Structure formats: structure tokens, C-alpha cells
Image (cartoon, rainbow, N blue to C red; front, side, top):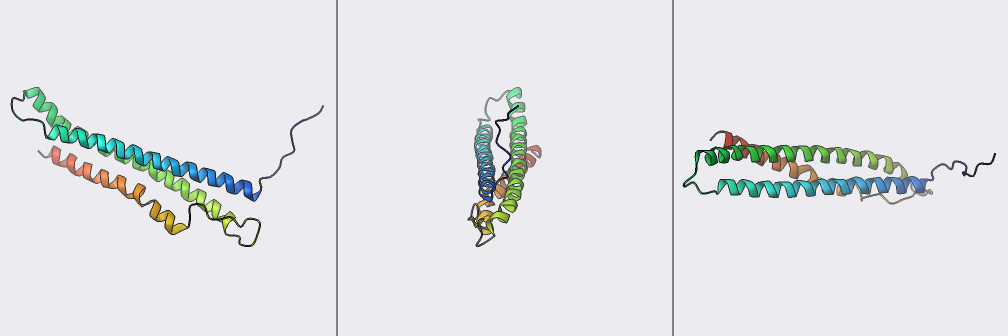
Length: 155
């Protein structure tokens, strides 16, 4: 009985570096997509809210008035929940990135050896500043929508 499979070859440092770099790139792309979802959803919901708020007050039936009042609270509630959920997924991605960078640093800091690879995504400071938008924009939307929702309920 003959086996054609090659014997197990352990991963080289270069293989691990490329795998980690690819995983970091994937997580970074997911964070970018999540931030794009956030911006698109918030733009749509702010437009809907502005339309509801600027609707004519004259000749409004009781049904339309009730629907408008419901939308003044429902749109901010939906936008708040959307921003909060997307933020949770962004936080998960940032945690995954931090994990991957911790693993990658072990490969990138051994100077003068075969594993003398460049850091992935720059240094800690550039990564920190690169994450400020995904980390700060969602809570900003959450805060604005919470304020609008509370104002709408207090009418």
C-alpha cells in the first residue's frame, strides 16, 4: 500500500508571517466594511428622520399625525440599535486584530534572525490612530440618536 501524500512539514516562520498578515488584512477589511455599513445606514436613517420632521403640518389626518409621532421615536431607536450592533461587531474585529498583532509581534521582533520581518500595519501608534475612526464614530452616532430618541419621546 503506497501513500502519495507528502510527509507533514511544519510551518516556517515565513509561512506563519504570511498567514498572520492575511488574517490581519481580512480583519482590517471587515472593519472597513462594518464602518461603511454604519455610514450608509446612518445617512439613510438621518434622511428619513429629516423628511419626517420637515413634513407639512397642515391638513394632517389623525392617522398621519400618529404615524409621524411614532416615526419621530422609531427612526432614532432603529438607528441607535443599528449603530450599537455595528459597533459591537467593530469591537470584536478590533479585539481579533489585537490578538493577531500580538501573535505577529513574536515573528517581527527577532532582529538579526531569519524571522526579521517588517511589522504588519506599522507600529502600535499608527495602528491606534488608524482605529480611532471605527472606535469613535459609532458611539458618536449612538449618542446623537439616543438624544433624538429621548427628545422625541418627551414631546
